[in-house]
Amino acid sequence: MRRLGFSCGFPLLSQRITHQVARRDLPLPTRCRRRPHLGIFRSGITLSEGMATRNIDTSNAARKKEVKKETRLGLTYKKDKDFGEWYSEVCVAGEMIEYYDISGCYILRPWTMAIWEMLQAFFDPEIKKMNIKNAYFPLFVTENVLQKEKDHIEGFAPEVAWVTKSGQSEMEIPVAIRPTSETVMYPYYSKWIRGHRDLPLKLNQWCNVVRWEFSHPTPFIRSREFLWQEGHTAFATKDEADQEVLEILELYRRIYEELLAIPVIKGKKSELEKFAGGLYTTSVEAFVPNTGRGIQGATSHCLGQNFAKMFQINFENEKGEKAMVWQNSWAYSTRTIGVMVMVHGDDKGLVLPPKVAAVQVIVIPVPYKDADTQAIFDACTSTVDTLCKAGFRAEVDLRDNYSPGWKYSHWEMKGVPLRLEIGPKDLANNQVRVVRRDNGAKMDIPMHSLVEKVKEILSYIQESLFNAAKQKRDACIKVINTWDEFIAALNDKKLILAPWCDEEDVEKDVKARTKGEHGAAKTLCTPFDQPRLPEGTLCFASGKPAKKWTYWGRSY
Image (cartoon, rainbow, N blue to C red):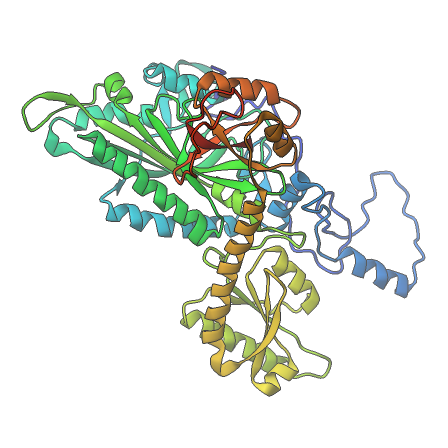
């Protein structure tokens, strides 16, 4: 395992971030200097020490033209042409994250945390209905405890970060920072569980974990520290554990499909891809059409009795006999937010589903010359009050140092689902202009039906985002039967459904044969919803009798 030489005082940093983006403040029209990669501009001409100041003769017209150009908002990269750069740019320009001075670590800004809190607000009450209780366990774990489950820790070994110093002194016993909490929690499950009346024990914790990723850190998707929830439960019987695995997986499906408007496939992981040390793993799998890559959305594992054996989690059953518990663990993380950005975002920026948007409706005044600006401002404020009282998350942008057009672009970049505009004509007609973020559609609605119409439109947006994402995902699914068809579909960035013999050696061989600069293909999941497998169907890779249909592809 790699020891990184952290200290409890100041960290000893051997690596620094290679792609660092400065903090993005809202640009003022009188400022000028362009920021790399963001298409955002700040002001002034910086002269290095000793450089002579030059008089610059610029006409007023040229200066106005320059200011107009340099204060525009917009993305430098296009989603279809340079997806990786587009994604990084939109995460920063949309005020989701800020780059930190340690590579692979990111500041989650309020726009992101609001979405995370929405997901928490859905999931936490649902697991409490299942009598799962929240707890919190320490961040640190000793090496001897971490090493107890060999298969488990071998799966995480390259990613484990270690605290080796306290101040300037080497620690006598280094401690690891949790990459996951099985080994942190289960010694205490052994202490707390004695008899069948102590079961089931069902705990969840909302926390952070550290996995010292060294390959291509990506905001939300692959970071060295991330937020998640992790549930850890113990039961007297396997049937109880099996039932909970699927109940939790259904909640994860609902997070993606009902809240984030992202279609997912529920299925079971292969033996090669399952959770290290577990009995079996189920997952919800999403797909990013632009890159042709699958992405594991969330996992629900049945751990079997392996950890119970290692940590001696035994109980006396109703017959007075000694038995081992059956255990599950399950988790989803802030990766969910990255998937949302990838699937719904466009060349204008973020596109947020209404159910998770921090601001569902932004109201913007559009005063013309000689208009009654105060009356328009008052109408905007009143409109927001009405919407907030009706339960919507609405705000008004009354800043007077930005034009309406600049505000449109700003809130489009941040992905707000619905924009309301109020100008002199709207004020006179007692109406508002409504503009949808997802498709740009515009309509005028009377004030007396404002609440009803906004509710209706937001519902349409949520449904439309899901339907559009599903249509794009489904168009990428390719059913194949032969190796040549598999390679052609892989090169076309497809989500491949193939007949498979379910042999680990064959899966390893597929990985080896497809390894290249874009990464190797692997199994994503075997869907629970299995198409009919005609008698005599052969495995696409080995030619042996196929046992099931499985999704394959490249993945994040």
